[in-house]
Image 1 (cartoon, chains in turn green, brown):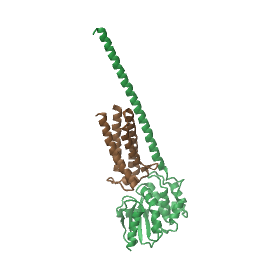
Image 2 (tube, rainbow over the protein chains, first blue to last red; image 1 turned 45 degrees about the vertical axis):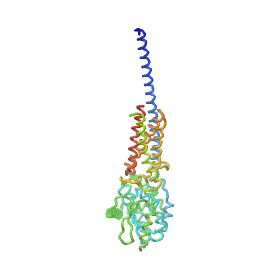
Image 3 (cartoon, rainbow over the protein chains, first blue to last red; image 1 turned 90 degrees about the vertical axis):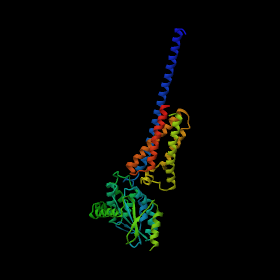
Image 4 (cartoon, chains in turn blue, red; image 1 turned 180 degrees about the horizontal axis):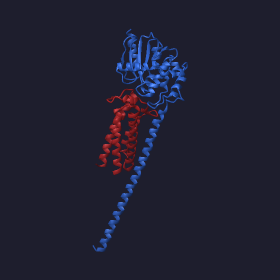
Length: 260
Length: 133
C-alpha cells in the first residue's frame, strides 16, 4: 500500500472512530436526560402521594368544626353518670377502661365498640364502665383528661370524652388548647363549660389522674386502651383484647353475666 | 453482571416485594392481625395513614411491585426507564411511610420495614441497570 493510500485509510478510520464516539456520547447524553426526566416525574408523583396522605389527616383537632355532638348526645341520653362511671351503680359487671384521649386506638374503641356496649349492656343495667384517664402521650393528653374529669363533676365526663374522640386531632400537635377544649364543652348540652374549664386545675382532679396512673401501674398496663373487667364490687382482672370489636367484649361480659 | 442476570435479580427482589405486600393486603381485607415480632404491626395497619384515598397503602405497594416486574417485560431503554421511575416512586413513598412509623405513629411494622428495604434494593438495581446500559 502506498503511503498516500495508507494516510487515507488512517484518516477514514479516525473519522469513523470520531463518529462512533460522537454517537456514543449523544446516546449517553440522551440517556442522562431521560433518567433526569424519569427522576423528575417520580419525585413529582412522590410529592403528590405525600401531600394526599398527609392532607387527609388535617381533620379533627379543629375548634371551629366540632362534629358528632348530636350522635354522642343520643348515645348517652338517659344513661346515668357518676364522676368517671357510666351506667347504673347496680349493674352486675364493671368494665374499667384505661385510655389516653390523644390515643387513636382509644378513639377506635370509642367509635366502634362503646356505642354497642352502651346500647346492649349499659342501657339494660347490666354493665357499668369506668374511665381511668391516662396522660402518657403528652401535654394535650393531660389537658384533655383534666377537662373530661372536670366535666365529670357535672355528670358529663362520658359526653366530653366521647365528643373529644370524635374530634380528636393528630397526636402531639398541641391542638388541645383552651379554644379546642372549650369548643368541645360548648357543644355538650347541659354542660357549664366555663365552670369545667375553671375546675381543670382542682386538687381533686390532680388526685384522680394520679389515681388512674397508679391503678394502671398496679395492673401492669403500658399501652392504651387497656381494660379490666369483673363482677361489680369484686376484684377485676385484665381483659386481653386482640381486636377492638364488640364481639370480644360481649363474650367476656356474657360469661360474667352467665356466671351470676 | 450481564443485563439479563441483573433483570433476573430485579425480578427476584420484586417477587419478594409482591409476597410481602400481598400478605399485608390479605391481612387488611381479611380483618386479621399480621404476624408481628416488633409489636407495632397492628397499630401501623390500623393507623389513619394505612390508607390513601380509601386505598390501602399495602395495595399500592403490591401494584408497584407488580408494575416493576411488568417493566422487565418491556424491551430496551423504555423498560429500563419505567422500572427506574417506579422504583424511585416506591423508594420515596416508602421513606415517607418509614418516617410516619418512627415519628407519627410511633410503632414499627416489620413487614413495612421489609418492604422499604426491598424498595431500596430495587432502586439501586434498576438505576444501576438504567445508567450502565
